[in-house]
Image 1 (cartoon, rainbow, N blue to C red):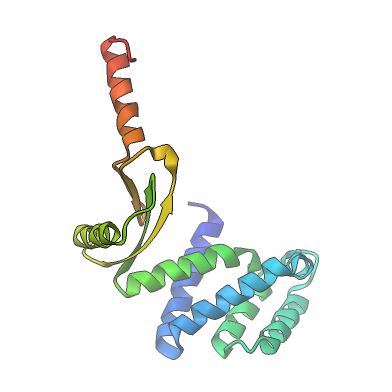
Image 2: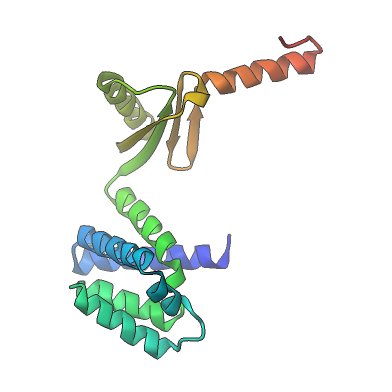
Length: 186
C-alpha cells in the first residue's frame, strides 16, 4: 500500500462522510470531476498548482479563486483549499475515482465492465447484468466494450474480481495443459 494510496482513500472516506451529512454527494462528485477536467484542459494552471515551489498559501488562494469563479459548493471549495494547503492536489484524479467507488458502495451499487468479442445484444446485456447482480448481491452499473482478441465469450470485471469466460483464455489453458502433459499442441 503506497503512502499516496492511503492518503487518497482517507481523503475520499472523509469527503464522502461530510458530503452525505452536509451536502449533496452527487453534486460533490460532479464538481470534483469538473475541477479535474478543468486542470486537464489547462496544463499550465495544473503545473503551478502541483509545483512544490509554489507556496501553499498561494495555491490555496488560487484554488479558492478558481472555485469561486466556477461556482463550486462550499464543501468542495474548502476541500480543494485543504488539498492545496497540504500539497495534495496531485491526488485529485485518484481521489475522484476513490470517491466515486465509495459513493457507489454506499448505495449498494457495484460497477462492472464487460468485454465481449462483438457487440452485446440488449437482451443478453440485461441478462448478464441480472446475473452479476445475483452474484454480488448489489445493483450493477454495467458498461460494455468490444475486444475482438478475446475471440468469444465474456470477460467481466466487477470491482476487483475478474470473471474470465473468454475463448482466448480457455484456449491458453488447454494449450498449457497439453504442454504440461507432454502432448503436442496444434
